[in-house]
Length: 222
Image 1 (cartoon, helix red, strand yellow):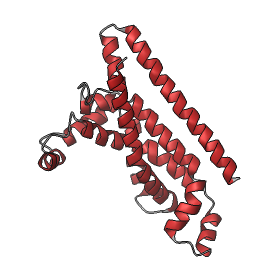
Image 2: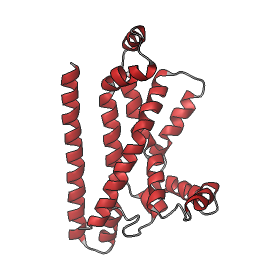
Image 3: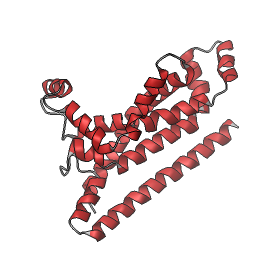
Image 4: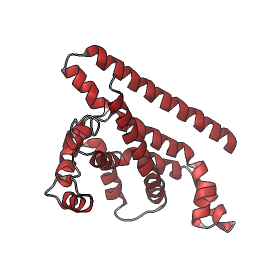
């Protein structure tokens, strides 16, 4: 069992969720409530990672983060090392690739809130921020929980983006999915089976806890 790869995958998934949660809240809320001319284009761009093969998307990210790109050069000048083949580069790629898994469920959660409820909050004198915190977030909770679970689980199992942007550097960018692939390539089927079972158990536990929390919140709101 490659515990280092497992810990790195959990750390990557956790940080991806932490970064994308506020993005999902504000971007999902904006797309749910606002109508503007380019809304369809924006939603299509958000959904783009779902239709592009991970290796293709990873290739574009690799080129965008490379040493000759403006992003790569800016990162090099600020932090003194390259962005690709590092955990930081892997995290940035994971955040970008998981945007649809975070934003779309959150958007659907906010869209499910009746307009009358938001208007009532305004009539009660609530500021937009207070209305978001006290009224909208509790009602959009199922969509937000779905967004967090999908982002976490998808990051744990991601392979193509990780391999393209991060490579397979033990302790730095070698995640559990890449480690399973390496085990299979080395004909260590028993090792691959053990790691796959652990990954399956973590995913099932995450989903079960999420359903339990959603049910408790739903009973409190009813």
